[in-house]
Image (cartoon, rainbow, N blue to C red; front, side, top):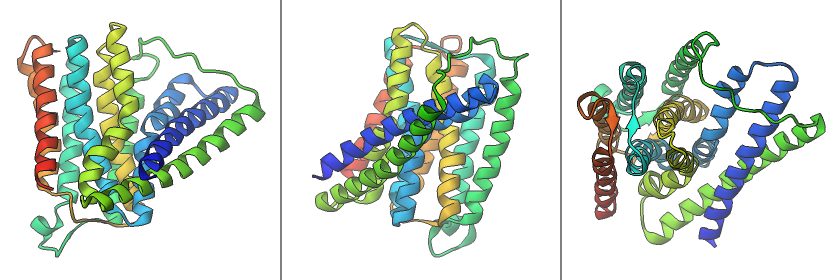
Length: 318
């Protein structure tokens, strides 16, 4: 039953995110909002909706380790597993701009989270808590990131072809938006309930479930998008996909979750957070010093093996 809740919840989240994105994009197009704005806001929200829904639902249910573990685990999965698997299908060329700006920004976001989540070490507190003020700090970083994204994606800088946005009748757009929201809300509740029950039945901590099962499940859209892009000979999409998702997850998803209610960390520790920071540094290192800014199959294999080693360690610690 819990497995059915988990799978059914994830399916509802994915379908709901797709419906909400299509409906909102159609309404935005009807009101002549530029496609670039739609892509950077509504579509970006749609791809990270699973992480947002699960983390906020977990925070409201008092499952802080699932809320934070989902984001930390998703970002580790994105950097090591998604980039690694994509590189196994086709080598990934990293642009100079990505190496100089986007990947360092991704590493910075992980360091900011590491600092915010280390109250015991930095402030001699009794426990590590992502407080409401920490959440607001993360949301401030998100607004800066959004402004930077709009700046580099302005029509003068943007040479990429725009994606076709479906035009739907207004009644259908509203139906898609309401149905999508319902799917996200109920799907999030089912998914978190299923994950929590599985953790209890197996005697596994919610943090391990959040870092592995939940994180992998919510990262499926990014994994599918990246592998399809590699098969279509566009593997570079994977890097942008991963960096955008990682920044959105830390700054917006955790920012929203912590702003709603403080998140007390009991199972998420510095090993997980340093793994998060280290995975970004490893990707940056490969891009800077190996094979002319290209993630080859060899580097891809190393990234995948690092993820397997990390999950093996988590399972061994149970």
